[in-house]
Amino acid sequence: MKRRKLLFSSAAALGLVAVGSGAWVYEDRQVFIPQLLQRLVGNFQMDPEDQRKFVDAMANHYGLEKLTALMGLYKIRQETGVGTPYTDLRVDNFERRLLTDFMVSTDYLRQQNKTNPMVSFLGYRLPCSNPYARFDGLA
Image 1: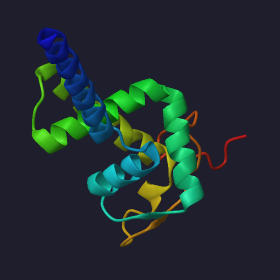
Image 2: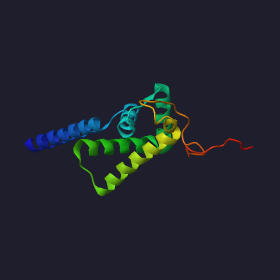
Image 3: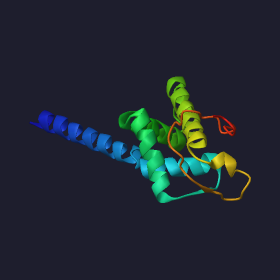
């Protein structure tokens, strides 16, 4: 009986650790992504509706499960410093894609010389993602 009790209590403890670590890693994407952008880009303001649209469009493009996994890997690396060459590459690529998507999906580059600019969401992955393209005079 003692062996069964030990196995049961071990399984229960492992289950609690798994649930606890999952809760620690999980964070709402509507909170995590804007905070990460503030850290990567600097101070800017964005209408909450535009912010929600951007995060939802990004989640739809990459897939909710993939985005959640990348956010978890990012948080683990930031909080603990633990990572492997494989996960570090994934986290670095996540940062780059997030920053690129933000730059081409908003009007941030047009307002980057302002202090604390009010940024608007233009649309996710526009056909021409060059922020310096000019289409004046084209028929």
